[in-house]
Structure formats: structure tokens, C-alpha cells
Length: 343
Image (cartoon, rainbow, N blue to C red; front, side, top):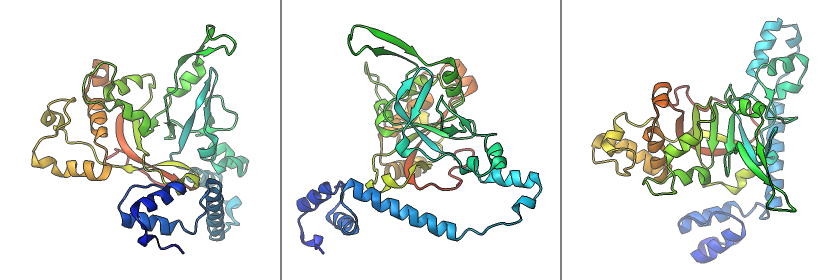
């Protein structure tokens, strides 16, 4: 086995680059990363195959621990239906695909979470699951429960409601395209939305320059989603290559709690990137710097909460925005991922 501790840092980074692994860190961290992956396949297909085997073993171990309930069919229907309800998954992240038709939207199949297994166990379980889960956005096989917490995730751009489709033979001819009323009505039921880092970072400008955007502009662009209550800004910059084959994305815990109520006053308004010397905010600032390590998020969140609020927004309130970490997980049952008040 190669003794990486004797190699120079440029050699370590070169080997990490060849293995498609992160090259950031001190020499000790680079050595640990290389030693950890020595026994793993280097190629992308090899890694995918290795993780598929791990997931298969995980499922086999899980199934071995399951005890059959022979008297389930003899239980009262009300109890059986309650059990089926408890078996439904928690919030799922559905990644939107870049393609959109007038009467249909698309999801990325490679990272799409599976439909609830309750839909296909038996007739009774399916009837219970269909109370919450419906076919969504004109798709023939994707079930979602957006009012109940399922999250739509935009990786590169948000779905345009109006666009033009150019004729391949003549670029001068373009056909206007508009989402159908049915699709728009369904988008209005979306309560939770997630945006990738490369999307929301474009709104991190804290200054008012022409052509640049901030959190207030982002909030205004999302007003067409009438039912939106929470926006998750994914910090997905540190994707682990090994995690990409684990199943599908999920949300981690919020990086920090609600900001102090009088923070805008101390900051001097939404366009100032300086918090001040008040020791009351030392703990909050430390969590922002050490945990998030993303100062741009401060500008997005502050302008989201404060900039150009309309009278309607002040009266009805605006969606809550938080920075969260993206996690890649195997197909799993329901887990509690956040508190109801998002604190």
C-alpha cells in the first residue's frame, strides 16, 4: 500500500484530482482522504457499483430485523388505516429537470426519491396513500404531497411560466409557450422550495448596482408561488462524491436559528454587511462564520426579510428562508427533520 504521508502536497493533490476527490485541506487531511479511498474503486462506474452493493447489504440487514405480523388483517380497519398512515414517508426532495412543457414538468430520475411503498402494498394501503399523494405536474408516475411538506428543488434555474421555443430550421421563428392553468394551479400548492447554491448565490449582492440582484429580488420572483411558506437555500458546495450514489437528496438541520429581532437596526439596514460590535450578537456571529462559512448568505437572508416589502407582504407575512445543508441518503422511512416553528 502506498505511504502517502511521505509524498509532497502537490503529489497528493494530483492523486486526489485523478480520483475526482476534493483537494482542499492540509496535508494530514489529504493523506487521510487518500488512505480512506485506497480500497474503493476509482472510476465513477466503480464507485456507483460499490455503493449499490452497500445499499443492497443495508436493505438485507434491515429486512432481516423485520418481524412479520400475522394478525394484522384481523385488526379493526381504523387501526390498520392509522398504521398505513404512519408508514408514509416524511418530506421528500424532488429535483426539477430543466425541461418543461406546457402541460407537464419533469423530474431528474437519477436522484428522484421513490414513490411511497404504501402505494403498492395492497388495495387498502393504496387507498390510504392516495389521500395524500397525487400524480403531479402531468407526470404518469411521480406522486407528491406538496401541501403536506414535499419539497421541489431547483438546481440551476427556476421554472419559467412563459418562454419561447425556437424553430430549429429558422431561428427567426419562435413559438410562445406558457404553462397550462392546471400546472400553474398545482405550483400554487407548493409550500416548501429548495434552491441550489449556484442559483441563490446570484442574489447575494449587498449593494444596489444596476443588473445585480439580492434577496429582495429573489423574494419578489417567487411571489408567483402563492402557497410558498419556506425556502431552503441549499449549501451544496461540499458534495461528497461517495454520497452521490446513496439515493436522493434530503435536507439537513437549519444552520442557525432565527436572527435577533433588532439585528436590522444594529446593521443599519438591509444593505450593510457589518453587524456591529454589540457583544449580544457574538454567539450568533460565531455560528454564522464557523458553521455556515458562507458570508454571502447573510446578505441574501437580510435583504429577503427587509428589502422592498409591500403592504401586502407586511400584512400577510413572507416565506421563511433558511440556509440548510444538502444530504444524500438511501431510501429511508420517515424522520423528523425540523421543528414546526423552524427554530
